[in-house]
Length: 220
Ligand code: C5P
Picture 1 (cartoon, rainbow, N blue to C red):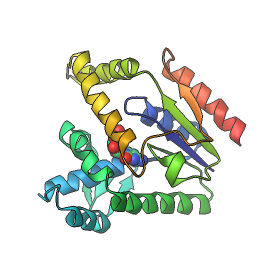
Picture 2: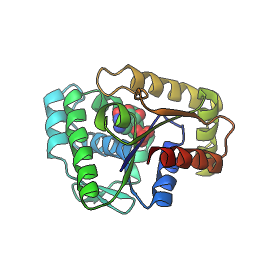
Picture 3: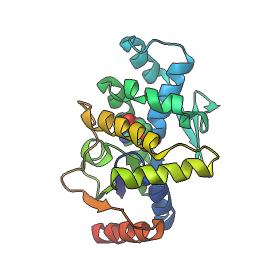
Picture 4: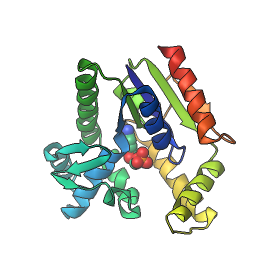
């Protein structure tokens, strides 16, 4: 079984998808981490963002692998560094390129296919999982919340890790990412036609997980 969870930045997809995978005893694939790792690799290799053939070549040669929750790029653990603001603000150069999306889409399908063949289910989270990557997934969820709620949650997350940012600033960055994610020509953020939309404003993480679990039960 494939369960896709898409939605905008700050909707809580990753933590919900991770918990859902645990509850269902499925594997979890964080596809944002794949875009982040390629972006980090390109930054480290000092390629220019204008060098589109170079960026595509980099993504095709890059080897991504996981050990539990850690992600490795060409055998280096990049789990922490892919989360830095430098990487986040550069991702659109990578995620906007159809050739790189095609490469990562193929990898995501291969991972899900291998797991399914081994009798394992998978929960994938991203922007295009239900709409583009897994159009035949049995269960598609689009998790969202108002921009203000998402920004507030993000601000809380940041201050828990010792960084305080004013809400306005968080909102400006988030709006920019929303615009980039919804405007791209291929793989734009949008709910699949057959996705169930879950608006999480005012819901606790436990309430969201219960809701999502009940949707999955209805799909199976
Ligand atoms: O999920 P996360 O916020 O880590 O994703 C980082 C970025 O990677 C997104 O803002 C988006 O630009 C890109 N992405 C994507 N398609 C996916 C997952 C992430 O374009 N399936």
